[in-house]
Length: 309
Image (cartoon, rainbow, N blue to C red; front, side, top):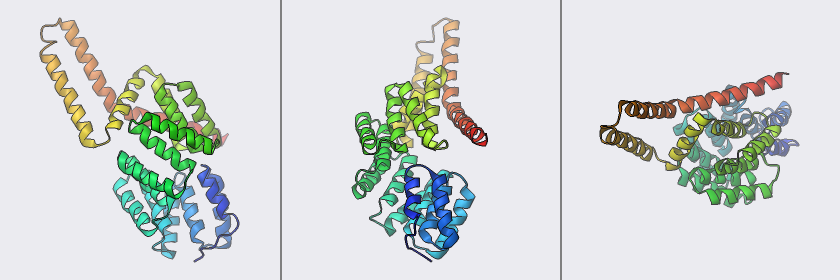
């Protein structure tokens, strides 16, 4: 079991920070060819594999955990892996354990923040990201994550200020470009948002946040999906599941009142038209997420085809 810092380790982690997991993977694999039990290289390799090959990432983490059962970074990357698999509860346990093991690790708080962000817990995510920023001042990735959190929580100006700070700190940072693109998307500056997404994708054609931003621009430009996008943003700002259900039930009650009062004496054509609009809205809010995910899968498929040729 080795904890030293061979040549290439810092380069590998720098590639990860820059959003280039493929280049990082090459660095870590090179180290492991000479030292198969190097913990930091194993953890770095697992992180580089998370979005490329989840099974290989899990196997690499198992190997690292056998060598270092209580290594904070092993717990942290396990949380990241579980998060990509949609296992939020398990991810939270591993992220919290990583923080317990290494309370002065900005990476541990950064991952904890992303777990909370994925669960729409804006205040908890903000607290974790701010703690990470205290430990790593000026980090463009943390600034971008904090910007995303505040943007989703509806605190647009604060989010915009943080995105600009991230860009000033590191103009070529992939995370900073996406953060600024999300702010542009919220402002309705769709051309700017698309250009920033494409700039990010030129650095890493498979970056999930950049692809998500590009698809969001396309969805907002579509008259039908644009309605869903506004609805999704509004519901996202509510944060808690209880608040969202409260809004859904409230809208349904308002519709029932409207249907039984204002529509009661209206011509049948008006009643039918209003009902069609209502049902269309209900269907859109139901199938919108699936359509959006299909758009993302289509974009990823196009990336794969471009890579093949």
